[in-house]
Length: 283
Image (tube, rainbow, N blue to C red):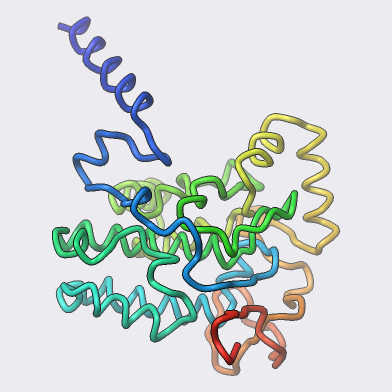
């Protein structure tokens, strides 16, 4: 019997790795449905330009705050968003993003999803949008902000302190994995809050740079020097990245009354927002 179980598991992993596509296995496709990567546009619907920055900085951008609020509203009231047009209106009404540039689903697939699957897709939408707002690879400076969604599996979140890693950021869209990690570490967080918190521990790196930094000590030293020179530090207790001066570089707008979890004493600086949509007349 144990030998039969081993054979079944080996067959499962063989099929999964053989037929995997953009980190999605054929098993997950059967269970969760396709992400429609092959059916999405091969170019961005709109033009975007974002600075290179870690995810902790992305989450302080007013654009990201607006997106997070829109996604949280839909997660809390998923029954009101049975229609794809309602999701499109919520995203495009709150942000500069075209729904096709951040969502790996279309009207037909959305109509066939269960409420639980819709929540997972909305979480993935948010995490993919954070990657776009990060600008691209922080190390080699390859831009991802204007790439199609099909390229985003190639942009990873690299933990500066692996020992503080709760789960792989790419798993943040899977509620069961996130909640299991939260319970293991004894934190009282929501699914959405935990996924965002995990992203704040990472820097965006392309696949090549992620491999080099992870497995080459010289490359890792060079990357960490870049991080240090730019003023970013990592909290030893949480692993969350923050700026040593608690002031973001030009391009961030902090509003009075904004309840910041990590930067409660940040001086309010009204500066030009570091996001631009080339198809819009305003920032």
